[in-house]
Image (cartoon, rainbow, N blue to C red; front, top):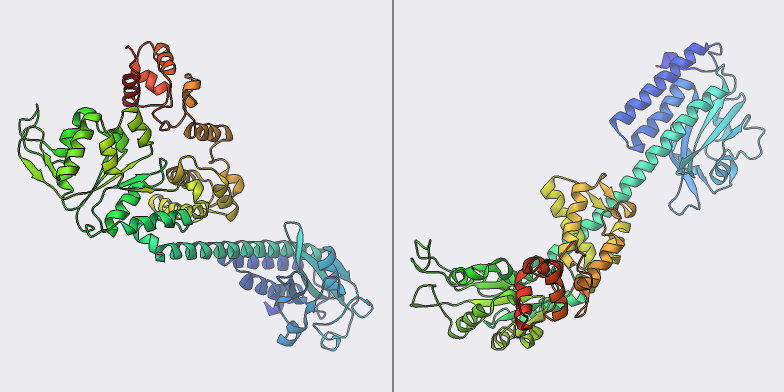
Length: 537
């Protein structure tokens, strides 16, 4: 390589020679980029190649400091350590400062005759005695000048100045791209480190013992109430909107109690048909009904010495409410088809998003059972009440979804701010589902503000969901029976009048299940309302 080095002693080099040198330089530079995108590696070696192959000596890359008020040499070849340290410039100061300030190429034909040339980094006595030129080009990122690529050029060389400028422009563009990529990686690394710190803090926080993420005052208040009653055997009633994490709180109560090593049984009352409630909860004897070929333990027996969680307790049929009350009062159960009482020791936790007092007033829920369950009511805050927890929750769901689906998707701070601004009528469940959808469908690993808008509920759909969730009696889906919401909300018992029930039933040709769907209710809810309003079928 040294034999091909163009110097003033080789003034008659042919154009073909310089083309070969240019091609060799570009091959070497691209090879470096293929091995490493680190500016420290690529840029320093690029300046070395400029000197060795093209005779553009003492190359340096000057970059703005973080404050943007000064600059200094960051990468150089052919300069001593002291010369690099002297290479500091203010915007507009000297040739280098002028390029930084105005973003324009500057060519100094003879440094000895240009009053703007400072000669600060390299003293004139250390340069060749003949005419020396200085070329300085701006390095840009997104149309903003962030640095300068500069070098000395011996004027006695046979190589055309235009050819040198073409190569330098290419390398200045490459330097800008490498520096931009490095800035993006550094910013992403800082963001991930911040996210990791948040997750570590959440895991170390006392609330994370139960898998409950968040530190907002309403959440901590609910957890404090939970821990205060964890050692007792009294029934606990968890209140709150759908999707606020009642099952997680019920399990947390179990884990915080002395029963933590015993079974935790969860039951969704809305998912059990009316005819199977008694056999599911209390078990049955052989021959109790067709198909009962063996004895079977009920869920209460399976939860003996532990905790049983009855979710959606408002869906429990009236006949079963009486049997549940007797179980709570006596501490015993009787199998379906059996006569022997079986003693059990169970901590009962129930949850509902319905207004049980209104259900009691309507006659849809037993008053004595309500008082028995309402010993220790704990209200769980909605996600709208704990906005400060959305960041940690989103990162937690993102981490789980990435791990489960072998993806690596992350949110920018702007995207998280958009999540925090949304009302979340579906609460934590809606947030978890949205994050999973983003992880599965995102087209790039970093999801920004513009990208996340494609996944957020539309304004019309979100407004409709919010209106349905907050609807007063007589409002909501019944106002327009032909409209079907995407997600059926739980409506209070007085949400529909007798006239609205009749209208929906008539519209559906007497089909009560279809009428219930039109009004946004379950068939059981429609039947209760129909019965209590004393309507004629």
